[in-house]
Amino acid sequence: MPAMTQIPEHYKTEFGTNWEFLVQQEMSKLKDRVTIEKVNGKEKSFNQLSPTTMTKVGTRAGDTVITDTATAKRWLRPYPYEKADLLDQWDSEYLGDIILPTSELMQNHAMAYGRACDEIIVDAALGDASTGESGTTVTPFDSNMSIAVGYVPTGSPANSGLTVAKLIQAKYLFDLNNVPERDPKFVAVSAKQLQDLLNQDKISSIDYNTVRALVAGEINTFLGFTFVRIDTDFFPYDAGTDIRTICAWSKSGIKMSDSGKQSFMDVRADKSHAIQLRTVASIGATRTQEKKVVRIYCDESPA
Image 1 (cartoon, rainbow, N blue to C red):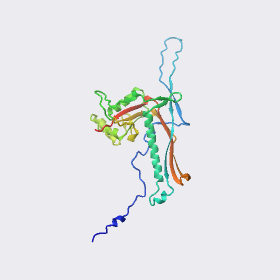
Image 2 (cartoon, rainbow, N blue to C red):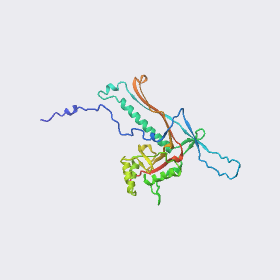
Image 3 (cartoon, rainbow, N blue to C red):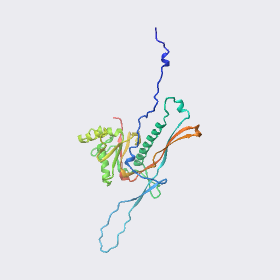
Image 4 (cartoon, one colour):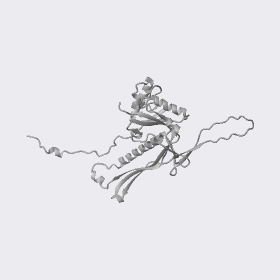
């Protein structure tokens, strides 16, 4: 006798009662690697002194030689950011055994805040800076602090991803411009750039072992840089050329303003008493000096 054919239609489906997060960068990885400044008001300016030189005194009791010291201003402007979710009044009842995700949504907001901090820092490192007396002058990135996608120490240029040679050149640019050795230096990379380093054909055994430990997460320093892996999408990418732009910087080379994350849970009478979850922050960043940030172009063309 055959089994009843309609029984499977009544099979029960069990649903999980909790919520889990899809994979994502869960916190800011760069905020502790820049200089944090408190901004009271809509903006803050920083006064800067240019390098100067001394003159040799060649005459006894002669006139004092007066030379002006050039000054500059750099501006930091925070902007408000927010993330909000709305839960209907009846969601908790209609979900049955499934728990309303209020706590999980707040955690999700916190993760979004952390990623926003990192995106703003990368944008400040590689983008335009506000300068001048009133902060209306736009100072673009200094092309002299760039490392070409085809950079090689010797021979014919050839497009490549992140290489040890490019990192050595980044260190050279900092040293050439007298960025203080005491100023911590960082390189922000994605998983692809770490893979590039490991896949180099011409790399010494000592460097290879160091890079292998770097990729494995056993260490995070190489050539005087602390490496920080962040979300790939935070870096500029040219889809036409498959070139991604990453950056290296000294800690004093980027200033950031962060009011701190604030979260609210309110009942919205104007939305049929729905529950509103809202997280806000006022954040902004700027490159402080062109000589303290290096731009590195990396080829991400398929092999």
